[in-house]
Length: 384
Image (spheres, rainbow, N blue to C red):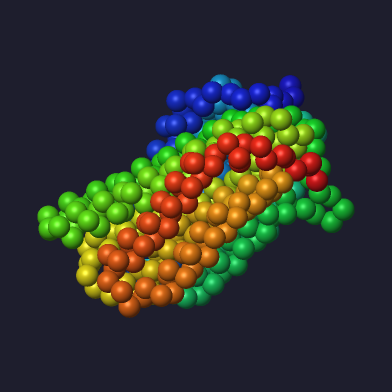
């Protein structure tokens, strides 16, 4: 029997929310790892691990969008991925140590096993051919992951970075093979469901941000500076939350009306990947400021405080530009302000850098809230 994915919006099931709990754990692990290893190497390691974890979540979510969670086969697949994902995410702190094989084995089991499963459930012709190409790309990257697990130190980071670049190239280009590419126009796809899953995953990321701020607050002395930095961190988080969710219904309408929901979904998945990475970085920067508010911010803290929101806003600005014939000048000005703020406050106290970064984001949120009707008139770009 062939499985089709209706374009109508579907409710997200409790099992899908239960599945996401494994990734609450993962985001917490990644935030803590970045806080403990605030170096260029530590940041690169955290980024590689994050991209792998996000790929496991995103491709599984895409599979459930194609084959709804009400299907018994899908429920079994989700529970299996959840079990493997728990071990994968538990290995994050020691993935570049003695748990490298655990991380890679569970990641490849999820990635390749889920794709093979998709090829057995009776997808439509376009999706069946596409996931054959996806499997080829995943299998091509597998030896690079395995070689990385077999070596130590910086060599492991090099091999795993190469593997994740293969993964990203495949995702970005829709996994082409010579003479064969994805033509997704007019293909039935529950884009609204995928968008809702992305919104819920974003809430998970914001929840971890709140937990990070709260944990830092409980370990810091209850002094006026602690209250100030914690309030600034929460204010910035609220502004980032507003920037995402205040305009999401406009995106929902586009997903429901577009002739190419798969293309819109791919753009959304890539944007979400960068947005969540930005939230993790911003939360780590906030925690550093709460712990050491009067020390010089330095380049590391500033890259987290300003670079995190810049990555978050930049990803969503790019996503909006792929969907609508509009590019927000206010967001471009905000990105420029974040870059300038990062550069000129490295010698300032950390709390001052945090205040300036939060003020820039809050200013954008206030501006967009007051000009929201103008954005609603943007026209969708015809599908390519």
